[in-house]
Length: 152
Ligand SMILES: [Ca+2]
Image (cartoon, rainbow, N blue to C red; front, side, top):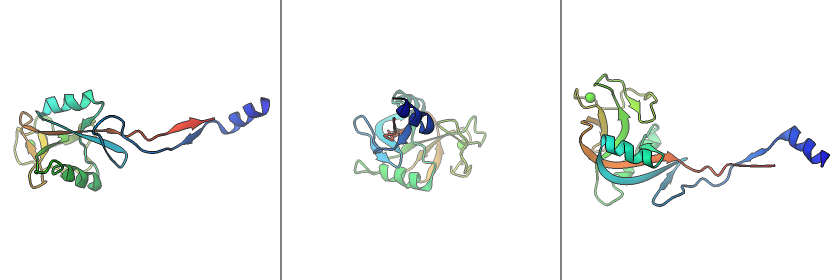
């Protein structure tokens, strides 16, 4: 008993990584993120739909994630325009991700129109600004279950 307690104090609990999974229906695993394709909505409704799933509109922050987002455009057999979780405020040209973080590449968006503060992947998979009131396919993302647990 005292010996076992001594070991625990010395080493503490041990973190073990298990299988990376997405719980719930219709979520797709990529890397350590889960993605779900939803309805065609305007930007604020898309933001809320993803928030209701404890997630955000898809935020492809790496080239690999961007390629994955583009592949999802075609998953239902026809190419669809989808929201990207990026936004500027009052056309200030400062692009922030849906989680509030600053985009490290501020040239990520082909930002060609004042008043268009939201972002879509258009048919040719280019990242363009667009009116937030437009409607596009909503893809939500949330963290995957990393299967981490402690053993004692
Ligand atoms: Ca713009």
